[in-house]
Length: 102
Image (cartoon, rainbow, N blue to C red; front, side, top):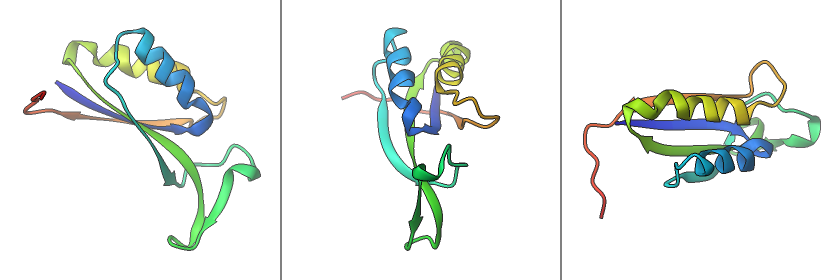
């Protein structure tokens, strides 16, 4: 199994979540985080006194999928998370050694 973490611009989050859910990936974790992606416009940036830097609010989407589903998940995120910029986000994949539902 694989754990997928995707960091995308907030304005693309709804489309990515809808696409994943429509394709059957319903156990998603979605959280807003502060990050240093390139802002789409000046209104997206804010200064973080905590970090001492310009940041933007990004969305982190996490899900667990079967290894055989990984390519589909990555394509759904990439195709629906694009902002029109060269770098629209980042996707990280980790192996899952144990998975228990309760």
